[in-house]
Image (tube, rainbow over all chains, first blue to last red):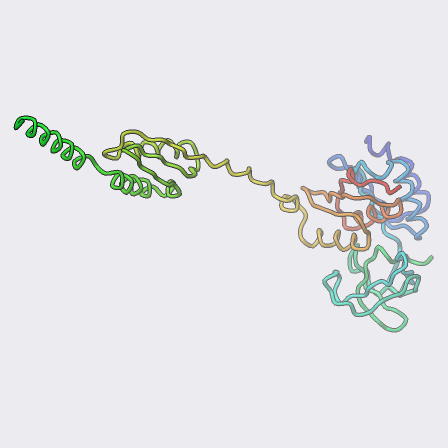
Length: 139
Length: 167
């Protein structure tokens, strides 16, 4: 229970901002929190809170597996630092590059293949897998 | 005078007799070499013999080998003494601990996901130990956040104690 106390503010906030399917479980000294945030802003707020409660997120006692609500057809913004985002034939960097999406380009979600790789489609019709880390659902 | 000549002859003959009967240095050398070669661990030794005194030099793999070398040479007929100048090879270095990636409980696909996620973040290396990704390097605050989010998405625990803040 101690970990739920430590992250009480985070859990409370997740509830308040309407994270759906919120699940909290403590196992082997790690608190597992999962759910779906409504927007990218909510997602960022939760991560900022995590960093505030546990500076640099260094304790390794929280697994925050929160994703952002995005259904097929949703608009995603490419959030690379400045470079193009590779679109690949398979969900891995081993996959052949079949296209590129520019920084800040808006692409369409085809399917959330897994938590790391999403299938997307650009407005030019290029379709393939891109690393989900660099895709933020548009509100 | 006749007696003197006979005595002289006798002495000469005796000397010749003993010299010819005692094994020659070259023979001893060959025998010692053969005896040492019979044991493959002592094959890299050199043998010199002078007046029945054997000098062995070379490298033995350990002290036991060196002692055996000495015994083997001493056992050869005609050897008066053995100078054992063999050196003992230093012990082999202790086995190096296997790289962390060999002791991980994380499967290949998961490791690849983490590596994929770190591709665009410079100055950070990752290894895998038990169920954790161990990160080493210097990162900006924003990159640290990205790394943690990426690890969470890949459902991988982390050890970020060696991940320092970029000033």
